[in-house]
Length: 90
Image (cartoon, rainbow, N blue to C red; front, side, top):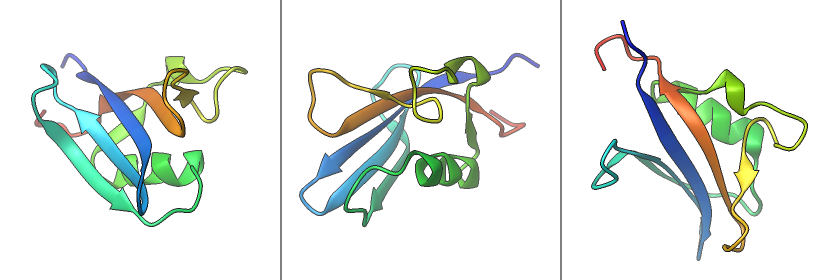
């Protein structure tokens, strides 16, 4: 089976953070969670991904990332990571 790769974003909102997994054509969210966090938590974000059928792509892990998450330079308090679906039906 060919793995499906997606992009996950976690960005600050007025009341916390929003975690999204973007569909292949970016037209819809496969996951959209509003999280009541005061600051970004890469470990918790990864846990929420797993709970929803995704895991951080192993290639995303490096010394320059936080558990695979990379800060989006042009956006304040926004992070991005490559994820893979662990849902066997995807």
